[in-house]
Image (tube, rainbow, N blue to C red; front, side, top):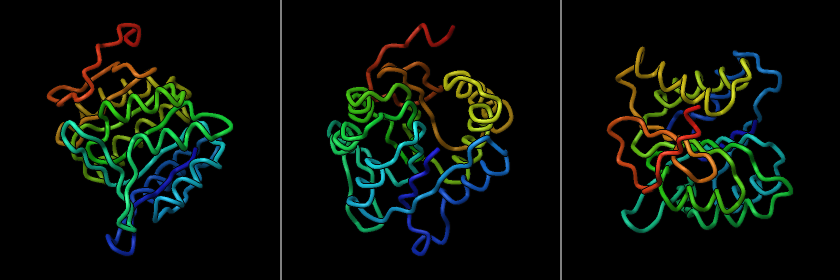
Length: 204
């Protein structure tokens, strides 16, 4: 598991990537997560391109420009679009099986389409703003199911979403799950910007 932490701990006095690493480490998965701090676009491109992990988690600040594009923003003040991410992924020797974006409002059509074109099978991303600690709470449950209990990405997501709604209904963030570019589940009250149809097979 690779965690690309694209936030600025000196500027914001906290780091979601480091918090998530510690939470996952406590769960004692077979393979400990690797965290890489990224400050700019060039470093992000290099680290993502040269990594070999099939599970990639991206902690960043995201922004959606309505009917235009989605951006991941970096501490350097620069950003990257969905097209740029796709170009990086196509240069990897092996495409990630699962990518998780912990960044506000990035689960949009351009990101979903770009990752599908690059060969990423599963994508989890929020379509709304989400606070770091709330994201870490949800993702800790997800990664326990995925990495420790060896559940499939879909089952791990589905059960995490059920736990969130049952025990932590006030957590911010609307997380969506995509398989092969299709929306498999959209949490209630989300503003789905993908226009994708529900993937019936994901409910089996």
